[in-house]
Length: 372
Image (cartoon, rainbow, N blue to C red; front, side, top):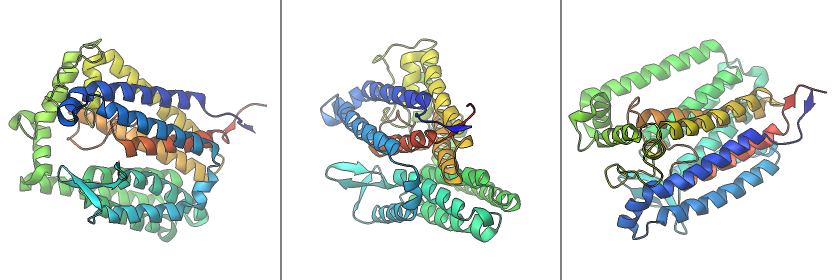
């Protein structure tokens, strides 16, 4: 066995292609919306190009920076993330569509919950490596992560951003499992989490009030409220269905013309399905599959526990968000606000995902491979 010297080329290639697809699809899907609301059809294109350049710089920096530095500063990163999550709930935070999830800095909106995803991954990986000899105990294996995870979830939930909070908890559970915590403790936590989520969904459904209840009811029957809660699901399915095998062609989507609200965001996969069809959507999913496969290989061949868990967390957050986003677009899951990694419009998300990919690429340089 010997350490590799180069980065993982398939991982880098899939990332670059996904970002390029994202730029094209954001421009295509947002043109009409941007023209009406911003007076400039290229408004979102200009911004996604800016974030892509910043993301490329972050990816390059993190790729060249030794991954161990994130373990050294994990507590500081986690503390900074918590401060941002608190600040967004104060008058410093910016409210958009009844949700206070952004902090505006110099005309640029920053989403602290996206930063929290990376922060929790570094923090958990560093803490679990530090406590690896006592990881089976509840005090060192589960308790510190439950406490910090509970705080992060509570702060994110207050924005309100329930779906992102669930994504963070899901990533934490995956990392705890891979990290080797006591299976009795893990099973208890998993059962509690599933039971709590089920109870919450039942409460939301039975109450029949609020946007969460309307979304859940619309998931069961979108046509029960076709002009409000079921609108996005119906228009998304119409977009995907009308795309057929090869699609209408880039820029020729009909549903993006104010039928599907803000198509450049959470429902961009529906526009992909409409414009490039089943074949194009499948190619996008294959690129994500390549990314996830290479990320899993890096995690399995990582040189130490911190790098293994960091690679696991980064790969998992991409995998989970792809599953959720595509599931929502195809009506397999209730409508949530989870973007499609590297493709949906969102500067903070793109920057964080590209930076984390840089960390993953740096870890790949130190992975052990068979051979002489």
